[in-house]
Image (tube, rainbow, N blue to C red; front, side, top):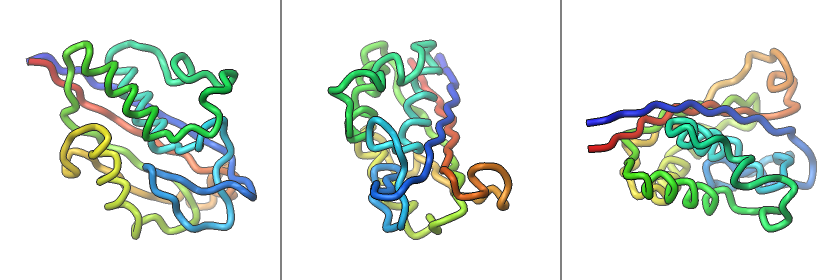
Length: 159
């Protein structure tokens, strides 16, 4: 069996008048993430990890912010497209481990739904999708609540 590991990272600025979407879940909050798509940092980090595992570049290559067709795009749709690229090359997802870094809001009540949505899109079991949440202990731009970031590691397998 062949294995590949990829890691991904994303960060977006928090602003007024935008929804806060993480892992495909719309989370009630006074601020949302600014980006060309829905700015779902968790899903973006997972996509970059999947692409990185196969040396396929990053999501900006496939969904450039200069392309109007991706304006306001649902990141779960983009995740499905990245998954298709992975499958076309004969690889499957072994597991995903990720962490969202945000001072507020509390994400624990939403984590299971995030795991379920990501797993459904990737056609895997929720127990193959790890999502954790932490704060930045008031340090840096995330700690000052200027943005939210996410990190992801993906294991791909091929028989």
